[in-house]
Image (cartoon, rainbow, N blue to C red):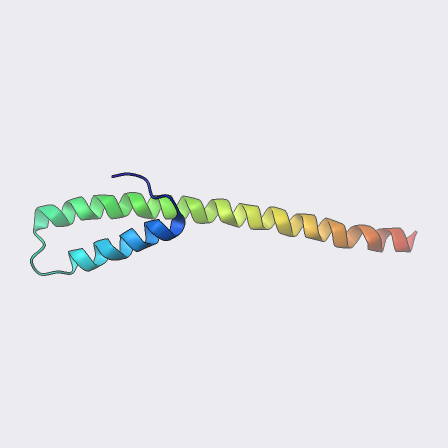
Length: 76
């Protein structure tokens, strides 16, 4: 399995795997392979969300510093 190019691509593939696993004609062996791929994709998507969350926290911290700095100067 190749790594997805984006979070959205990973989620699309996860949805496709879910649909395929729900089909009655999917064999047990194929389901296990699909499950392994889905587990890898979930790990990728989770890591991507964690990274994005950290980026958002950094942006919010910078904004908070910018907002607090003028207030501190006014108090002096």
